[in-house]
Amino acid sequence: MNEKSITIGVTGHRDLDKMNKEELSKKIEDILLHFNNSYKDLYLISALAEGADSLVAKIALKIGYKLIVYIPFCESEYVKSFADKNHKNEYFKLKNLAIDFKVICLDKVKSKDLCYQKLGKEIVDNSDYLLALWDRVDNQKIGGTADVVKYKIQKDKNNSIIIIDIKR
Image (cartoon, rainbow, N blue to C red):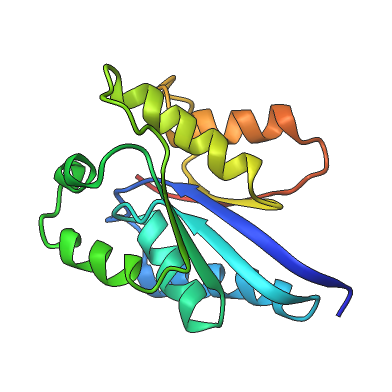
């Protein structure tokens, strides 16, 4: 092993309905396993939202990564943002497996989008690599997947971003 630890941050779309989940899961697993040979301690930072965040977290936990959870604002409000109300149970199940948990915007927020943007920056700033499940469309949404990817590219010129193309 060359290095002691590595941290992978995840960003991506919540709606993965048009994707073959088995094929997508295999791609994610292959990418995450790539780091197993070079690093002793493997960490994943995820917001555990529906779609990309939770899918990557489940796969990472299965293959031995330690989970760190960052959420944009207070948990009671965050879980209301899940379109699939059943995801709330999955969120808490995964969160309970995390070794660390952080709320990014602690104060009463005026703009949830700005909290999502801060969340994305926090994930990028605390990760060695960013794994993005993205359709490569820049929708100009503050705090969205494209915003996080652009921040990573601007911040880091070392090619430490991995993009899995998503159909939406």
